[in-house]
Amino acid sequence: MFSLSIPFFHQNLWSQLLSFRFPLWKNYCPSVFFDYLEAFGLFSSSLDIQTVAKLLESKTSFSYYPVSGFVPPNRYLSLLHDHCFPIATTLRTFDENDFSLTPDLIHDLLGHVPWLLHPAFSDFFLNMGRIFNKIVEKVKSLSSKKEIIQILQSHLMAIVRCFWFTVETGLIENHEGRKAYGAALVSSPRELQYAFTNDIQVFPLELDLIINQPFDTSKLQKIFFSIKHFDELLELTLNLEQMIDQGLLESVPLHNQEKCLTGFEVLFQ
Image (cartoon, one colour):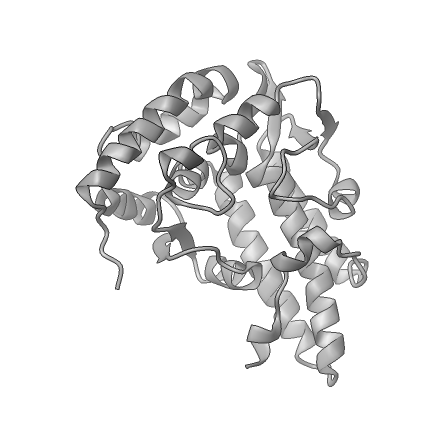
């Protein structure tokens, strides 16, 4: 059972990691992000996870759900469907400050949790969990395990890409200019700064493009999608569900670098 506290040496590390990010966030993140951080008490140099957990439950549609490491997408979505928000219990070392391959407290608490105060983000996560559960229920009527896995894998790949190009690496363009809101960017100084160089391409958010755009989490991203307002996140989930209901996403291609993101045998054990 995970205790909602972290050791003293982790508190010091947390403070160092946090202070390193503030100047970058001021340059590259929307101002409302700071309001949400403050609402959760995440400006503090000492991390009080118990308080964050209570605030999460009282202010959002989710409860705090600690996890020890990477959560497979199918499990992650099932937790969201149950109104549980997975949050890693690990904390990156300072050597991993610039770029961490796996989610940790920095990624989950600072990159995702603050945004849950915005209804569009909360609805995005809830809808994605609901949509995946709907798919799982739908394929139960099929007799072939191979067909079930293929359909689940195809739909999940579409969902994972929607996550990656929005709440992980998403950009927003409004009266403040172009800013980053995705957790993979917010949590990674290296990724965040790279996303504002001339080496990347930025496209308006378009579901068809996202669904067919492969990505590799181990490398700096070259392609990003931008929104003009956060309500586009909710609209994306509704359009995604419509495509699924119409049977349009049963053969989404899976690229080699993405195979580790989709494992379904656990559903049949």
